[in-house]
Amino acid sequence: MSVNEWGTLKEPTAYVPPKASEPSDAARRADKSSPGMWNEDLGRYGSDTWNLPGYGESGPKCGEWYPAAVCDECGHLDLGTHNCGRRSCPNCWGIWAKEASVRATKRVQAFRHTQPDNHLRQIAHAVVSPPEGDVMNEREFYQGRKRAAEIAEEKGFRGFAVVPHPWRVTEDAKGEYEQSVPRDSDGNALMGVWVWLRKEFDEAGLRERIYWSPHYHIIGATSAGMEPGAESDAWNYNFIRSLDSYDGIRDRSSHEDVYGAFRYLMSHTGFAEGSTKQAVTWYGDLANSVFVEEASAEWQVQKPSEGVRSALEREIEDVAGVTEEDDEDGAEADEGDDVGECPCGDCGGVLIDVFDIRMYLDHNDPPPDVARRMQTAYEWRVGDRSPPPGMKHPRTEEQAREAFEAMT
Image 1 (cartoon, rainbow, N blue to C red):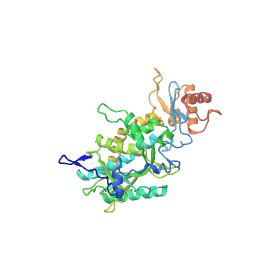
Image 2 (image 1 turned 90 degrees about the vertical axis):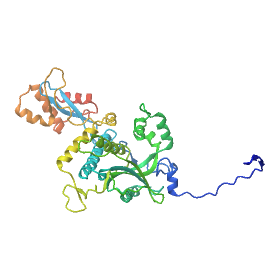
Image 3 (image 1 turned 180 degrees about the vertical axis):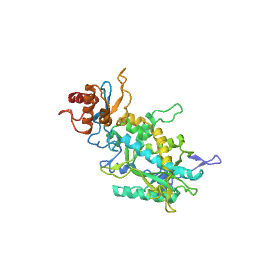
Image 4 (image 1 turned 90 degrees about the horizontal axis):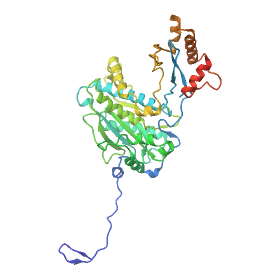
């Protein structure tokens, strides 16, 4: 028995459930923690044929050590390692991601440089997601990229990049992330969920924590007529945020924001195994045929001068620097960076790059043993000589030095 509003007893009534109604696709998407997420029950479609950057094969010489320079006084051998630069390479994907992000940032910032100092310089980030189950193979995945670009233009983007992503993180994995990710004194996570996944798990562990849910990131120039996503949209459109304003070539904060956005997206874009399709494609005012060095048509946009573009590139490369991921991947051991003073104590010599050795020997007369070491290093590097059998492909610095001494 229950009590009515006047305090008297009333007879209980049977519970009648409300009439069920079929929610719209948009309502179902809005009910999820991440707009456009698919149902995890669809599984990890394509996980055997789709790769994340760094979870594939290296180039044939990647990771091998080689002679980079020789000291003109003591004959000290300076070494470097070959990098294939492939996005699939476990060692080099960081190089690929950084270079791709620098190029994308340079293009966006160069475009902003051409625009009036008003709202036309504004850059934003959005995500477009297809209806659940609509994109289930490689052909549909790349067709979806074109559809996402059309939607971005309909919503008001003028010129932009599209970066496709095949997966999202499972709800259980998000819970793990929230529990274990390190945080700063204000409680902010020190890394994004995908950076955390790559650091904490091998490929098998990572794949257990992601599932097939393709979507397309948009980064580009907005307009005064931007429109939000609507329930009637066939594809989900979610505006993420506006990026820092652009105040000129040396606006480091702006470069950092744009580069950081692209760099994070590069860490977990996906590609079909063996595919050579680009991770970033350009549309609208930033399309290759529109944003050009010599604009001859009204619909084209003139790029800034080569001097401006070069200055932007230097500033952005300085922002990119050596990322924490690059350090861990060993991706920054590139060719010839150490040429300069010899590191051997009081030697006082200078490291001569192997490709400068022949010219150096034509104009200088170093001690015979130093000249011999220089000649050996040069011949090894250009392929005129090889280390002895069993030592031809040194995978460590120690092996490379042993091979070199065996040759001299």
